[in-house]
Amino acid sequence: MKPIPLSQMPLGKPARVAALACSGAERKRLLDLGVVDGTEIHPLYTSPFGNPAAYLVRGAVIALRRDVSDNVLVTYL
Image (cartoon, rainbow, N blue to C red; front, side):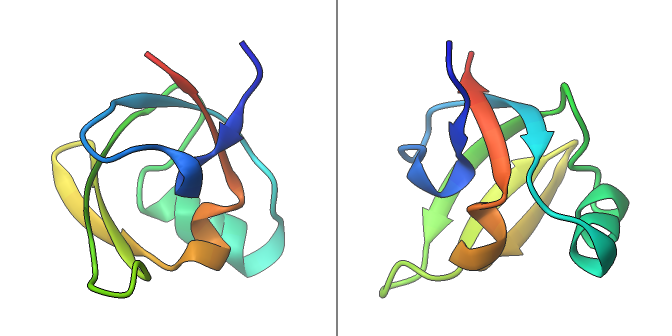
């Protein structure tokens, strides 16, 4: 299955991180938040305007803006 950006995942549908399509400080921040290859992510909520969105990652809820979640490539579980 071809990876898609995390921002395109429907709410409540779990996914697994396939790759990060960014570098530098943004990549380091995602890695520090636990968004690494193979990690399971659950899209939970979006703000009223759809940006940012909340995700459950390794037992913690994190919020990511769409421009950041576009760089997290995932596959459906």
